[in-house]
Length: 189
Image (cartoon, rainbow, N blue to C red; front, side):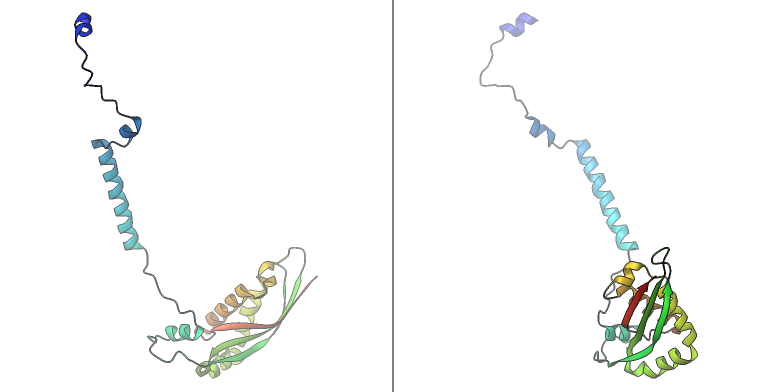
């Protein structure tokens, strides 16, 4: 047998075909096609599940007046130039012992709420009359539990947001569009 192969003439026109490693690596055989098909089906299934279970995006009004209109159930066709008024709530002097362990921070400030002009009277009656003690308690609770970073924030973003939220929870209606803090002072002991 070995002599037969050795005696056979070699045809130089027929060179052995050698596949480069690059062409072999990207060649798609049946197994690779099945794996790619399975991955495509899994990805399509995940996309379908995301469409079914994720909530639809909701447009949130960035303007306080638009937010008030949206809460009242208006479809936005009404006048967005709703007049806003400031209602002074009170002056607060309280302490915070949670912000820095081992010391007490005395906090004093004046609080003003921005409400819709047509809600001024019911809000003022509720805050300074029927719900006065609960509103004061909610505001003092927020200040007492605020972190040192939030107390040192020059714009008081988190503090204002929490005060607004807690006042609206106590009153069980979204009167407050924005809380305004004036004359904010802290003294650490």
